[in-house]
Image (cartoon, rainbow, N blue to C red; front, side, top):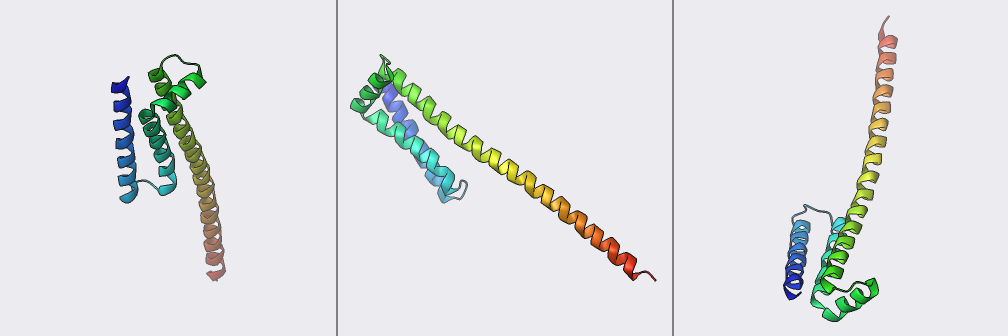
Length: 122
């Protein structure tokens, strides 16, 4: 049990450091780092607070605290991944809409160029 708690603690500290360094180097935007920082903080708190983990274990109806910790890790990261899936979907829709607007503008520019060429001819 203590070994698992120490591994999760190291993992969460490493995640915190990686995210903060990525934000500092502008590899990840601040608004996206909040989810990762929240997940790392949640894991750090649960891995260091035995009483809180015992309470969560009883609340989940699980008999083993390491199993509850693994379940929480899974749920936290599932939530983060779901949030990023929503962001990616929104960006893809915006990208499609922008490509359609660019195509319309290109069509209008070509139409104006053709109209100008016909007016310039004697």
